[in-house]
Amino acid sequence: MLTDPLSFEPLFMERVWGGRRLETEYGKKLPPAVRIGESWEIVDRAEAQSVVHTGPLRGRTLHQLWMEDRDLLFGEIGNAPRFPLFLKLLDAREKLSVQVHPPAEVALELGGEPKTEFWYVARADPGAQIFAGLAEQSSQPQFAAVIAEARVANQLHRIAVKPGDAILLPSGRVHAIGAGNLIVEVQQNSDTTYRVFDWNRLGADGPARELHVEQSLRCIDFADIEPELLQPEGESLVRHELFQVEKWEINGERAALSGDASFAIFCCLSGEVRCSGMSAKPGSFFIVPACLPNVPLRPAAGDTSVLRITAGR
View 1 (cartoon, rainbow, N blue to C red):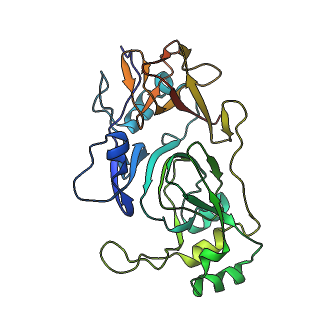
View 2 (view 1 turned 90 degrees about the vertical axis):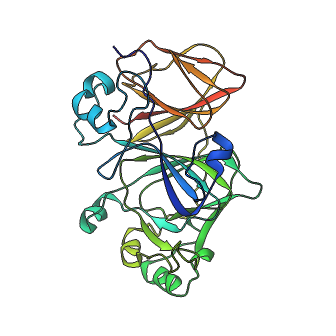
């Protein structure tokens, strides 16, 4: 009988732009002497699986849970072949490549997957920024010339960020994370990325990383000019057909599955949150499954806040 939320073992990904901040900020046990750019916290991909860390379901993969116990754990959420969301922490010690994800119709033609994502800035160094959308109107031929001349940086819309800022990145929006950011990323279950520009940087093994110019030019929304950060509406940060994200301040007992959510994913941002027999500190993720409709959240330390992520319906 399941009585506690589901927690999973993170998967750490080495990246040329990564660092060690997931260890120093969140106490994650990173492999030694490598730059870790991504921690895949909740993932159901053919090439990568979240595995339950504790409790009676320990050792089972997220895909097994999705295929074998979907109604019990996730409720009425449709018949997608895999769990629909992909949750990450991103540590940008250096700038990420400028990239774009394909809209659905283009993804189908290119043999990829559409990808819309959301960023929440958990930590940001003074002067940190992100890049999202274009600074001015452009066209496919004009931008092709910009890429060829390595002038992409001048065409990007730059946004100064601080902890607590958030932005939606619909497929087709060209974007990059600037140096000094620690980001919570919520995205649809996809891993198709086309690299537009990599700041003339060498890869970890020497040669420059591959660019995907032709694919990128087909995907970029050239009318996407100077997008803005999200403006919260109460606790709601974003409501999208794929996912909804809220920021909760946990000052007392609160039902985890209030509203129409069949299940909910939580990411602890500050303090410490307790849910049934488990507790989570900053940087920790857990799923409250549909079979625990009455389980409450409680603060276990001062100034406790969480992100609450639910799937679109």
